[in-house]
Length: 336
Image (cartoon, rainbow, N blue to C red; front, side, top):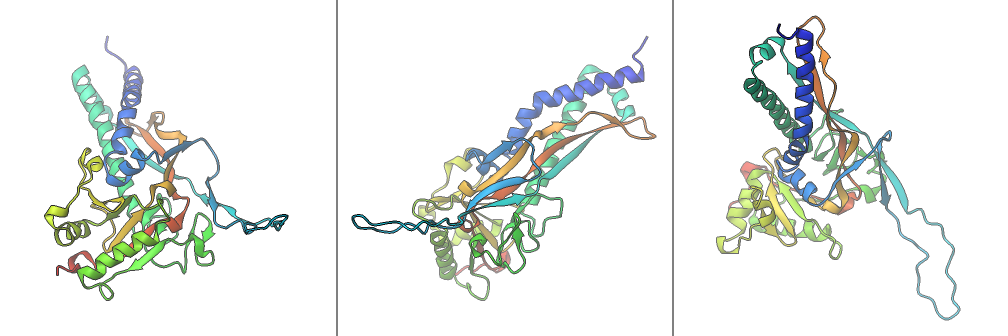
């Protein structure tokens, strides 16, 4: 006597769930090594996990201790209670992916080998789809209300780097009135930077402005044409120094001072991000860390669905140590 539809569904529920649990660590590793941005955060231990909470809190140092002064023998210090710390409050966001099982498809692939191939293919597709969505959100010019914060944007208050702060409340802090919460910005757009020299000077100036002593940006990410412009026109072949850390995992990367210069295919055109990973994090809730939900029947159908869920967000704890370079649009980059 063959298995009943109910017992087959139960067995397949367990098979999919247990297979995902076996593959999950590998899938998460693949997700964080699939793109330069998330690989860089992962390699710098900037993927942080915490449990619960209504929002993601980040303690920010924004002031100075004004009691510091030079004194003579018997001199006194002023008793001053400076307000030097505040908290940025970032919303949790949820990224979810359906894994759908069709009754007829399960039944036609009920042989052990065919079924395992089907399971692995569906879970791999879910992994790749989540990679694609995470990278798209990271470089969205105007993220959707339910999206993670993006690195560079022009639209709303979910963008870590911006060129204008007239309407900008990131992490609950208004950057228009709290200028210490503004990222550095250098304008080298078509009107201001129509020669290679001006763009090179802009890159140098922004790097130096965003650096404090040995605390400086460690990765510069832009759009593909900017990377190619830098590679072809700024650096002579004999001067090119490639970054081996990125190269070891298959990404293109050039050394620029103390940073790596690379690109993302989805990066915003005409915008180059200068990032200090000390103050940039991907925060994940341990209760929804690429976990699979229970399988649920789809109403009025023979089919079933489960979700793989990630709860988290991309945040910064020091915005002024991040920089944004405005450049000519890719097709307008100077060649001489």
